[in-house]
Length: 88
Image (cartoon, rainbow, N blue to C red; front, side):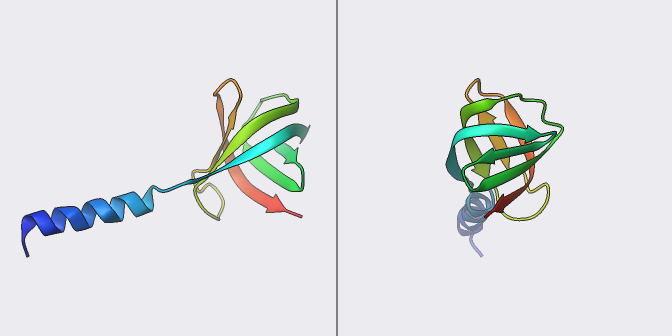
């Protein structure tokens, strides 16, 4: 196999593995320790101490499963690790 073809194949694979989806989380509120709500979405975090009573944020969703690498990114650009996302 040509090295250039192998390199391109590996690069394509790497791009698909690191792809993430971004979702707006309007009016996100802290409802308990490591638990936030935005509309019908509950977000369980890990060691997140961000206090908010209606802040907009962005969810960087890396995929299902606990500790998948997903994060909430707040208006001040600080991130919190997401443990899981629950929708009603």
